[in-house]
Length: 115
Image (cartoon, rainbow, N blue to C red; front, side):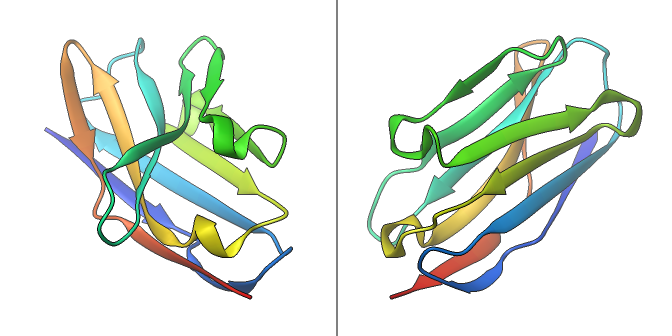
């Protein structure tokens, strides 16, 4: 089994920054994809950013240029640095890990951006 523990959410003013982290534990294989998704009330969950174990990244269009995803493979930890936050970035942010055809989710961390 895989466990994902997120940290770093909270309340921030528009234009501010936040750094999310997610530590994975359990049966982690060396080849995987870790990343972040978000879900706002009444909306579908959407991709924010993902990063492969080799370092390739992909971002959702709405965060390009405002966020950077990175990872520490030795710690099985993924980070999301978000800047120039907007009120519409308010959502629950979920960490995810994909490996061997399975996706694991964290419990989610709330990010609220006030205007």
